[in-house]
Image (cartoon, rainbow, N blue to C red; front, side, top):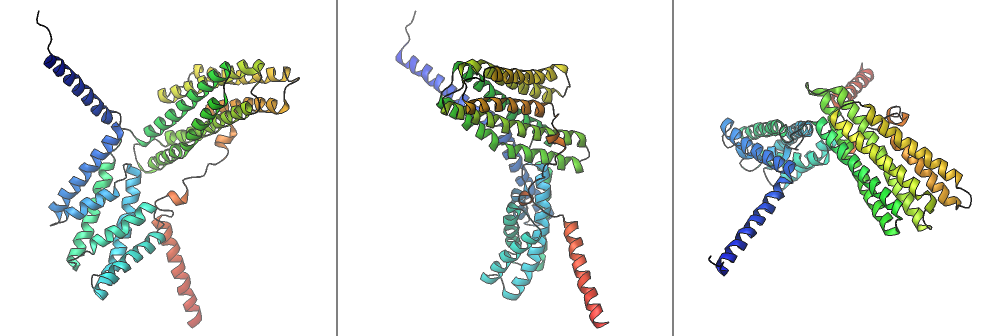
Length: 416
């Protein structure tokens, strides 16, 4: 039987190395499927815009591709808003810039006037930060060197082509609808809350340290930072359902409420983490109540996990309701234990421990959406500063026409 040589070992090691390298390299992309899909769609959109622009207009592909790259926002809803705002702003800004070029020729003054004009127009139309940058960029492309009336017209047409293609391709940037993405984000955030509560339950039962409590609090703060993303996605699902014919408005409204519910849940989880941290700093929770607190936290974690399953399965089952009720009962048992064993306990520690009961109760109310705080209190819509258009063009036109008509009537009263 031939003995393996050093060359054979080298070949085997090289093969294993290349195999592991390729596996890790492919995993870099498979773990980022959504990102890969988005950049591929954006690339195809820009390439298509260049091809269509050249077919429709001579040398119009470059402008169309640039505008497409600036307008595509990965989300259909955002691309529609941004594309619409960019087309309007660019058309107005470029028209005024044409006058500046006609008066001063293309140069220092005309470029400055173009950027200044577009900034004012973006502000007047209440465009967002992204569109406020894209509008002057596109306007400068429109009035670039070699400008003539026909050239400006073709570049404006290329702008329209690029924005429309961006809107079309943005529909394929995600494998799911805005409602589906909302469900995924809510489920992911809720699962992270459940896991953190489970970790805190195990830590309390075993006797946790200040370092452990600090780690829980840090993780809870990171969860709170995810709330704006969930809220923005839920608002997008609502807005998408208003104008897209196949979207279900009732589902979007329900998901919005569930988004608010998971927001309340995250806040309570952070409060629990802060309470446990403060308790260990001041000496720790009494051993007699550790087990009850751990049980209550575990019940809350289990209830959240089951609620996530219900959200994904879209089923109303008594099993899920029982899990939420178990969390309430665990909290009530904790309260009874704390009251019975309150003698000789530090009042501050007792208050902190009882506050955990309130936190768990609020989590349960958020999970089954029985709290009036979810539905009776109107949650503010998307902040005006984050919207692409704070006011719709119809509203702005109506206000402007009323102001003009008011001035006309004033002039007529003075002279007639």
